[in-house]
Image (cartoon, rainbow, N blue to C red; front, side, top):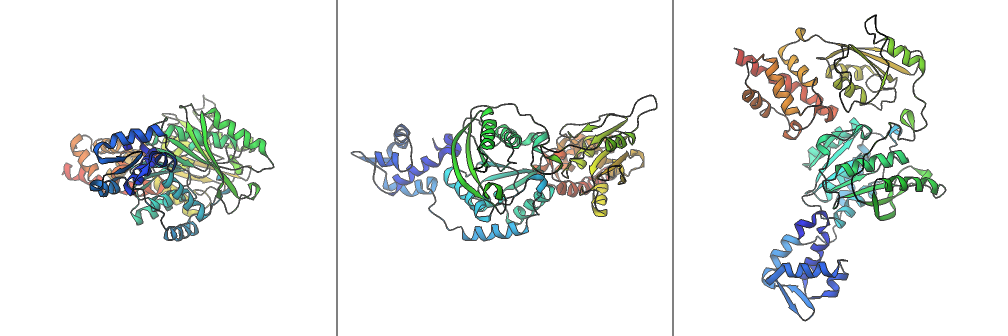
Length: 508
């Protein structure tokens, strides 16, 4: 019974804990943990001879109490002072909030309250929690409160993913990170895989609806799964709150509970620096679609007007097709699926890129020339270090030029020209083959890259053994390259290149 209840088994454990303490009448077994009478009666029947009765009172037989407490006991109130201190340190070190992504830092107390509430309401041990965006570091707080939870964080901010990876690894926590822009879909490995999903989305109707829809897509069981959302609106604008709630109801979400002012923030003063906790129960899966403008600030905001005509014209002219064809029409961002496959040239409007789109577009494209329009303050453009890092990541695919003198003075055009495979070393050719199939499962793509680079010298079995023995996390081998955070891609490429030395040994 406990196993079948999944994340909702917490209340059954509370009944068993009461029975393990002393005699309790049936009415108390119903009232104290708030469990329906018939459920308590079913549990008592399931206990069989391990339960004793005296009139209307019940208890676990003394001879098996210890084993029941060990298996089903509910932890008492714990002191989380040390966890709070740790969260305070983490928040002090976390990368600065980005207003363009509507980041507003939650307090350390809020991160801890989220973790304690989740652990006290749901049976988290051995379960899977997904955090859709996590600048507040809820993942690290939950893992500290209950280390037996398996947690995945998907986020757009590469800096944050590297930060969480580093802290979780140093503490031995079961927290993994994946890159994702919710507007372009979840990584395939995340779909229909989680018991609970938590998110603090952008507080626009578009943002709330999109993130909530993605959360439902990630639940393994829609009937038993729950979506937990932070959302707040000013008491001066109740119509906005109504619009957001309507967006959530369109997705078939039932509000099981709304806990007022549960989340507190250092900022967000327009809504009183507080937001409610929405506990949402899905009634089914709905298709999710939406534009890229879901935020309240910056180039991705609902009010943004987009790039100038002059900038788009300059972009098109830098990606010419043969003289008999007109210049390509600029495409908007959409790197979740391959773009420009086999195209002679491609122009992509990334003027609203918050940072990660440029790399993902380079990974997802296979033209002879690619021209991308990005803002001047783009992290891969605005500094020499950023430009060098990007060039090193895609060096086996493209040579890059950064043209900052665009007519509008606000954007830069990044021109990527394809590198000829014949000029590359064996290791670089192997890396190139992997980068060119960024949407395939890494294990398979890497294996085939070794076979291709060796020109058939390696067998499929030999190539698979090389990949399996590489110094790479086995979980990452089951993922798509395009879903990995940038820092893990950067760490992976030298390993791929080094794996080609086995090809040279085979040839020798």
